[in-house]
Length: 463
Image 1 (cartoon, rainbow, N blue to C red):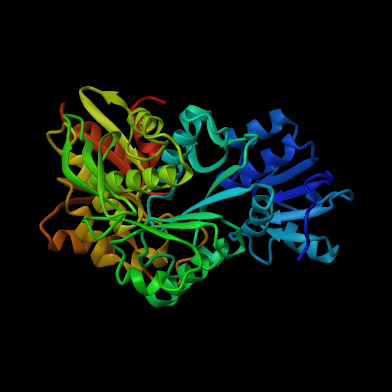
Image 2: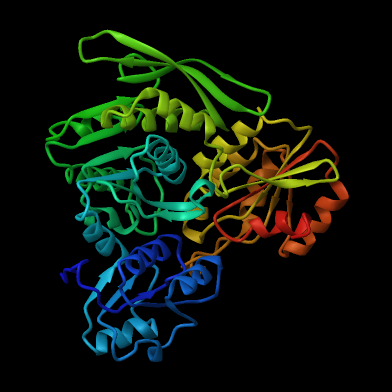
């Protein structure tokens, strides 16, 4: 595999430069005075930001985008072998690295790379960890899978030993990483277009855990099924958080304020068998974020960060874009947006919404990928039925073709059997018009999904 020397700038071309992770990697190279170019299917705030920093961004992908002075290609897992730029790079026999391989090599430049992994909650927990490190004056480098308001984007370039990044299991990309500390939030079935079954997924996570050195640490959710089977025999210490005193960290007296923000009494079991407690108040909603915050606290404790910094940062953290994000109000109706696209995430978001002020909860859901919709059809129906009313859009295809004959009408039929108020529209305009006619003051509308469903709420608000 090609090894990049980050002290010797070369011209790097990114195929898919507008992605949330790829754009951050490109920005890091620009900060090190590397010539950077890249292409994407459409312009965005991220690509415009890169252009302002000096990158050459091309909209649309073609062989002509690979210039004669290109010395390295970085590409995402979504790029297929028939992509014209990929083909041209192969024809020219240029060095090529996947995004994950490149990110893994970048981690080697830091003494304490920290990876946040799991089926759900990576972006929020990475953001919590980021806020704690910043608040404590640790000056970290951060690569977040969403827009974090406090850093004005998805990337922060620091000058310390700490590098924090999300670690995604899809295509086993995190096996290319070099973490010293890893957080694993949960392990469930997802990405079934790549993994064979849950056993395959668990084996993948075990391989990821084995990347940790003896002087590192694994922080893991102790409620994961048969968690000991996954962690037994690891070279590094294992720190567990979860529901009860069998874990090193666990919550008690969980409660919510009038806006659904959680607080709890944290119990921390010390090495000598005694316990210490602390009162934790969060600026984000939902029981799932109580567990995310415990993972972040365990990490901060392991790093020796003062608890006062940790608790203050968690109180101040109000979330990242597209995670139970309040977009605004119109006519007394509150519009929220959430990235949830897996049944567990949907259930967590709609359960959190029950604690949020509302008369009726409308969930506008855009299924994400055909394979995920097919694999979890019953689970989607169960989770969505927690809303008072569900409006379905067409499936967002992302990287897939519909070769399995699944549509949103299949999910509609499942929801109707549950006697759940459900509607389906092919066009966003029709959804917006329906909501304008039927949603009432005091109602909450949650646009939900990993595609472009966020546009519905933004259009309603006149953006």
